[in-house]
Amino acid sequence: MVDFMLDEEKRREYNRRKTKEWKEKNQTRWTEIQKQCRRRRCITTTNGHLWGTKRPYPENGCELCNRIGRLHYHHYDDNDLRKGIWVCFLCHKFVERVEKAEGIVEKYSKLKNEVCN
Image (cartoon, rainbow, N blue to C red; front, side, top):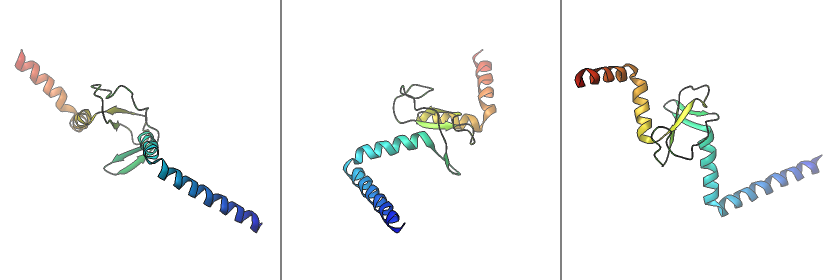
C-alpha cells in the first residue's frame, strides 16, 4: 500500500511540474484560458465575488449599443447569473443609474414631452 501511495504522489508531482512548465512556456495562451474561464463564471460586486454560469459572451459587441471592445456583465439576480446582459462600460454605467432611480426615466420622458409640445 505504501508503494501505491508513493506512485500516486510521484504522479501528482509530475502533473504539477508538467502543468507549471506548460503555463510558463505558454503564458499568453494560459492568460487567455484564465480570462475566458473568469468571463464565463465570475462576477465582481460591491459585496465580493459571485460564481456561477453567465450567458455566453456576445461576438458582436455590447448588447445595447453594439460597441466593440471590453464588455461588462450586468446581472439582475444574485441567485441566477444567467439573468444578465453583456454591455460596454458606458451602457453599464447607464443601466446602473437607471436601476437606482427607476422613476426618473418616466419622469424625464413626461417632462420632455411637456416641454417639447
